[in-house]
Amino acid sequence: MFRRTDTAATLATALVAAAAALVLTASTSAAAATAPGFLNGTDLPPHPTSAWYAGEITKGLPETDTFCLDGVLPAAGSWHRAFGTEYDTGAVQVSVRSASPSAAARLVGTLERKVAACAADWLRTTPGGTASWQDYGTLPVEEGAHVYGVHTSIPESEPGVHLYGIGRDGATVTVVKWGQMGDLSQAPVAAFKKTTTRAVNKLNP
Image 1 (cartoon, rainbow, N blue to C red):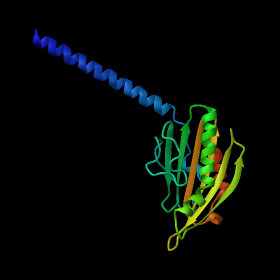
Image 2 (cartoon, one colour):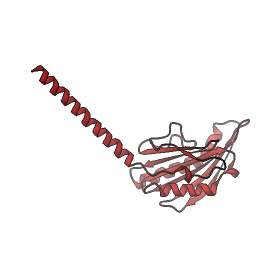
Image 3 (cartoon, rainbow, N blue to C red):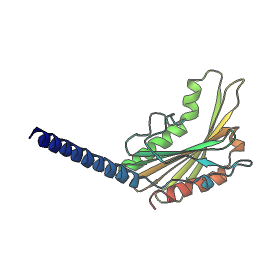
Image 4 (cartoon, rainbow, N blue to C red):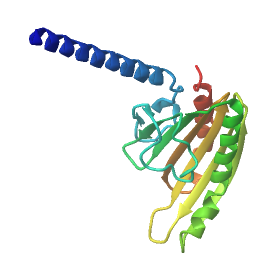
């Protein structure tokens, strides 16, 4: 009698565990299915001596804060993908599913203001540094996109240049950040504008 009861209890426990695993798998699959479309390495500005390597599309924000955008990208509804080369050039794309198109529009405004203020904000916390920024204008894709450049440098260190593409398709926002050593004169702005356009076009395939 006790053996039958123990066997039934064990079977019931196993069935509950299996059901829970199925629910978790279904939830994970559903989450993966809602990830926005992302860039591939071939969509980025070509590097003269190296191919681009693309990481996995990962739920959440990157482990390292995105320069100029630390503290303003929401973790909820976000995915990211990192890209690298064999040299100092790298990139990251972060996309966010907002609650509504209006919420997405507000997030775009916050991101644009943060990037536009980045050089000045960086200078206030970096004694002896130099910084500059450039507004490269808007792009006519979906609900629009905007491209910026930021250059920073400190004495006895290599200067850094970053390009930002911020765009929206409906309730989905994406940011692409490209960076390498150098200054704004060396940034591949025309190619990066094409990258930004592709990033927004790929959001909701």
